[in-house]
Image 1: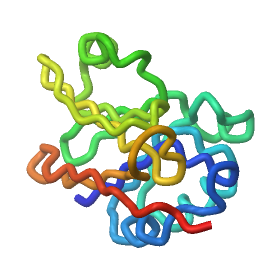
Image 2: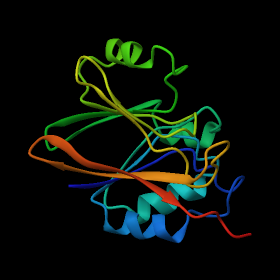
Image 3: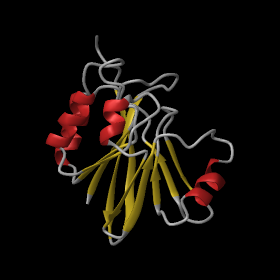
Image 4: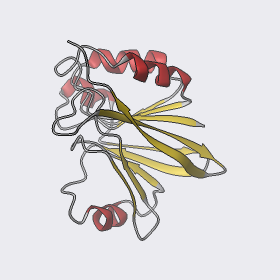
Length: 168
């Protein structure tokens, strides 16, 4: 099972659209995971139409229209991998311990908000993944997203994709 992980797209405020490279990855994916801060409902509509399967939550910048259609925490079982998706996990200090306590029945937690790519595993085995942002890098050197595979009930081949700067 091929996954694409994105967050903090901020379309249309920070970008008019997702980069073409990312749309290509979405077209090849079995599951697209979005960890919030969409901003516009149009991107949700387009991802729902284009993705084979979409698992998503809303973020702190998402208004009532998006919150009416998306949960604060999305959950799914993907080939035996228990997945949760949330926008905010709080400050980086203590994140692993805090998330392990809040998500004891989860194997992988995808989150966003900081725009900072993150890939760690807690002492309890919970994998924490933040794909960064494909459209608003903030203080990061690159726009980013992640891909991963699920086979045999486990997550493999997590890759952080760094994209070239956008052209105006």
